[in-house]
Image 1 (cartoon, rainbow, N blue to C red):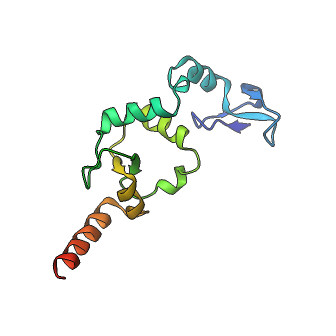
Image 2: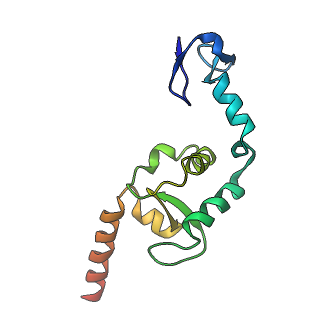
Length: 136
């Protein structure tokens, strides 16, 4: 028995395609899930096209400073490090999940400054920074 990484159901090993690159010699997703995925248009989209779809939904400006250049998609709750290594897959997951509310568009500078803070923590940090700058 093996559990499919897409549907999460335990299935017979014969329900998985052969894959010599894996330890158990079978693909991670079951044949049924792979067929559904291959029939969808999601896997046919790549980098810039996926980003355009995401920015069309969430907006094309940074929610903190209003910048329109060097935009990136960010996790509101600050847990983006788990998706950092596989950005194209993460973009597909956002689209497949129906554009969840825990994502937002930030410019590169704001996203770098935010690091792994939550949205609320970052807004408080910005407020403290503005207060310090105004008191100079």
